[in-house]
Figure 1: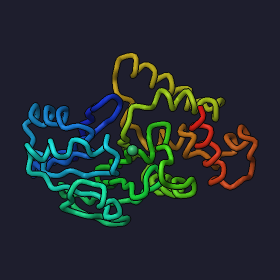
Figure 2 (figure 1 turned 120 degrees about the horizontal axis):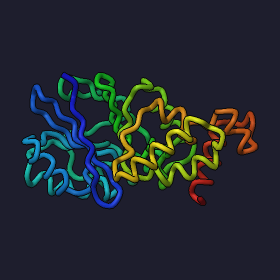
Figure 3 (figure 1 turned 180 degrees about the horizontal axis):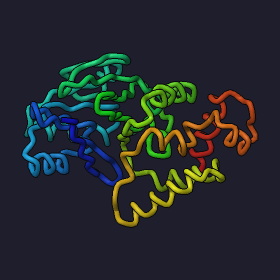
Figure 4 (figure 1 turned 180 degrees about the vertical axis):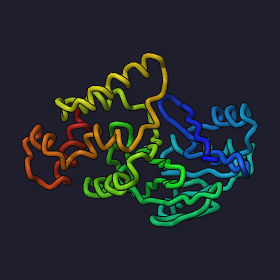
Amino acid sequence: MPLELVTIPALSDNYTYLLHDAKSGATACIDVPEADPILAELSKRGWSLTEIWLTHHHHDHIGGVDGLLAAHDAKVTGATADIHRLPPLNREVADGDVFMFGGEEVTVLDVSGHTNGHIAFSLPGSGYAFTADSLMALGCGRLFEGTAPQMWDSLQKLAALDPDTVICSGHEYTQANAKFAITIDPDNADLKDRIARINSARDRNEPTVPSTLAEELATNPFLRAADPEIQAQLDMIGEDPVDVFAEIRTRKDHF
Ligand SMILES: [Zn+2]
């Protein structure tokens, strides 16, 4: 039986996720903006939280850890690189590490850029990747600590996953990202279709995440820095995709 994924909105525009293995009863929570909506979902479903996986140290991703631990006996996993600014960890991980959850392999990817030490969790078996503030729906995280080449490398790791991978990212920024993306990639029919779907989802107050890697590859300008049409739009034909990515990131910062 495949792992069950639940998407939970939290704070003003964050998302957190539950991953549940019906067979063993194991349940993981990926990032903890605040405890209350997660506790409510667990109790509604009758699930006990067994694991907490943290992608990075920002408060809107770890702020509810203590609240969850007060109610559930869960083991906390996070990056060794961030141990000084994460809640106490039961399992430290680094790029390339693999651990098991619900009979499936979970691979840790270092996806630094937004912060140094930001990690993603990839489950090739059920096809989920938890990317938080690295690869986001139609966007990528702002470069608070890392450099453009670092984020480009991180995005390339995620872009190499199976295109059917379900991308579980950390925020509802998609509509704002769409307004920017169309300025970089105005003739992209897939992007126009996706924007229409995004707008109707938001009109119904529905999340625009998770997305799929295939959608992101076709429409996310931050993954498309090597695309000739985008390079032409930016007057950067034939230039190094890292530089094109850096230009797109800078434009977004000032959009
Ligand atoms: Zn963040």
